[in-house]
Length: 126
Image (tube, rainbow, N blue to C red):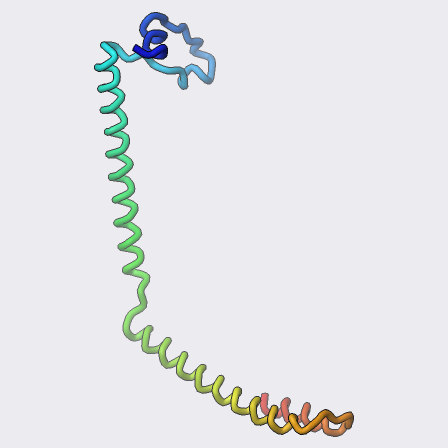
């Protein structure tokens, strides 16, 4: 028999009912050490079963919510068309930027007039 079992079997502790820690004090379990262990085992088995049921309930709720969140076929088509439009606009922008880059690759100029013309050209596109 362990020291813990001997101590709980041989001594009875008096608890102060006004003390906040009295509810947290260990409770004595009647019976032989084997019966005590069996009682503890059953207690934890019930707790684990309750937690398992709760987690299954939560998981079922999550899967139902996830199924409801998925977009409909119409929403998917709208998203698809929007993405296609954005891709085509970005492709045009890249082509324009590459064309501008090839025009300016000739060299660096210090002319204010050319910079002013390029700036006014870029503003007219926007």
